Image 1 (spheres, rainbow, N blue to C red):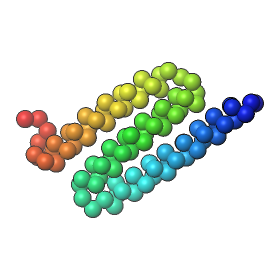
Image 2: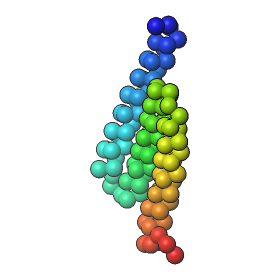
Image 3: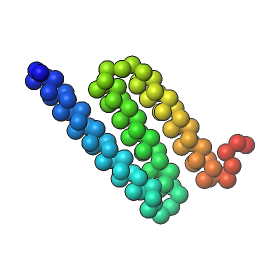
Amino acid sequence: MSFATQLMETTLIIAFVTLAFAQALCMVRLVIGPTTGDRILALDTMVINALGIVVLLGIHQGGRIYFEVSLLIAMLGFVSTVALARFMLRGDIIE
């Protein structure tokens, strides 16, 4: 195994651990968040962290499908955040 391959593997492992730790911290904020806004922000950040984990998994395994999945996760995360924010402000989602 070459030095560049070892460096890439080490970097990916560090990135996976960092994103998993960030995901755990967001889950703590989701559970103990004092306001609904904190919980919505924690969910949105969890979506972004999950997106990063999927992209890292795609880089690690070399699969193209993971990048398409990451686009779907990003779109669903954005729409759900907007829907939750609109529900919090107005009380309904569809006008």
